[in-house]
Length: 401
Image 1 (spheres, rainbow, N blue to C red):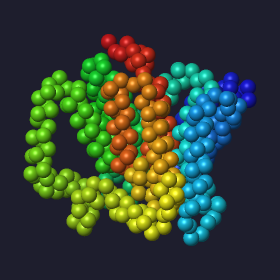
Image 2 (cartoon, rainbow, N blue to C red):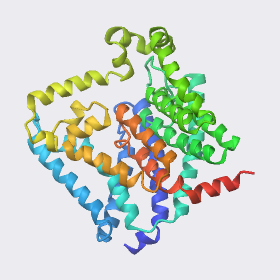
Image 3 (cartoon, helix red, strand yellow):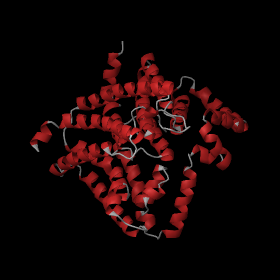
Image 4 (spheres, rainbow, N blue to C red):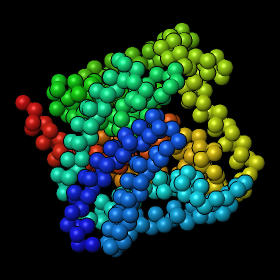
């Protein structure tokens, strides 16, 4: 135990770096060696979870409230699973890819928060993690560019398909998109504070490569950033507030032409638009999945399911984050979501920081994946609580001549 405490900063840094390296190994296994073992990233995360659990148990008197939330979620999950209707139950399948697997992914960020609050991590360790992230993403962006120029399947977001997108080393494009979003809000936040062209360039740099990932969620995220900027931040924001309704009106009048032009840039979505319409296209068929889930709920849920949830999440997952949490954990799942945001991401934040954090969460609300993508949500927690803070920003601004 003393050895773990002595080297805990190194252990944390080691595992975070290992998350990214093992994810690339997973990507290679998935894309080049189909059918081979491909859970390298999962193994690393499980090992780190064991280390975190040991440290939490040894310091269990700290952060009782977070532990209570964790146990409340566990109780809710067990009740929901007892009431869930499943054709066949296999404990092995539940652990590897079923509801137990997903429950562990949902609570992983809570376990990480408990771990961080149970021990003393040096602030410099979090800065090292962020510096590594930037170096990794810079190299990853080079791989994205190479993938685009030479059509390298290994670096594509959707390999061996017509769908556009390059995610580089990442095995999951949604995780890549959230991590790029997190870096974008950091440098945008820094630029708004110090007005240095260097940070504006960095913001635009990361935006460019984020767009190459090929996720519509990034476009939605950037629209929200743009709206916040012109309404609250821009020098002539009063003018923009009057101009914005006019832009919305023009878009509404010419919406068909604009939509067809945008879809022309991404031919993959044209057939879906013609078959199912705009909503299905924008939501990547999630609206159809939502209809299936609602039909299942109408047929199978009782009154207690609405409180505790209870659904085969791997089968009925919609990828609207709040909807999935509600179906999986009921009212408690929704409460957990807001508890996580309010008490662990927004505390001690000014207006702009709160707005940027909420934009990322709101993007996830409609596209899904942030809390379930363990690496992304951990990086987000670190950036929100230890990087986008005054002393760190003062250091960054001080570096700029």
